[in-house]
Amino acid sequence: MYEFAEWDSFYLIVGGAAGALIGLQFVVMTLIASRGETNAPAEAGKAFSTPTVVHFTTVLFIAAVVRAPWGSPTPPAIIGGLVGIAGVIYVIRVQMLIRKQDAYTPVLEDWVFHCILPLAAYFAFMVLAVLSLRAESNVHFALFGTAAGVLTLLFTGIHNAWDTVVWHVFSKPAESTEEEGSVPNDD
Image 1 (tube, rainbow, N blue to C red):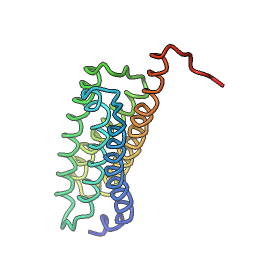
Image 2: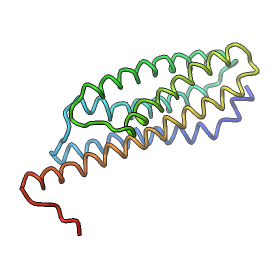
Image 3: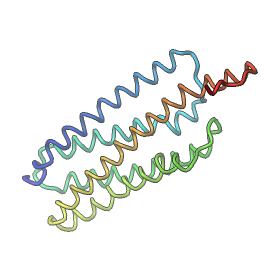
């Protein structure tokens, strides 16, 4: 299909970035764990780190689905809709995990990047699937909408991965300074 062929470079770049970021996330978490200073219980990892890998994996999966040689837009639309449904359910689960864990008190930024933006992206996949199944003329719009959802997940994942690493790296030294009874030097 000509419409899908136009997106070849976009999904090659986005899918490659997602795959690389998945690997990088594993490397960073391994390095943090090798420090022997894990700051958070497993519940916090399930709430904050695991969803990042899930979002990157979703981007990689959608890039592969869009680039498969489909004869019609129906199969990728159905798959996109299923990804959207699964993603909405997953984000609701993440929201419950965030509320359940007590290692970190989330702020507005956390709710936006861990719940609201991913929920919007996955919900968009559901809506766009329905639109593209209703009329083939909506495929062009659905591809742009899917690209926006994929970029939302990719950039959200990058933000969340950075946030997680910063928290792991900088929260422990601050705690150990306070435990030793010394006041941090602001110079």
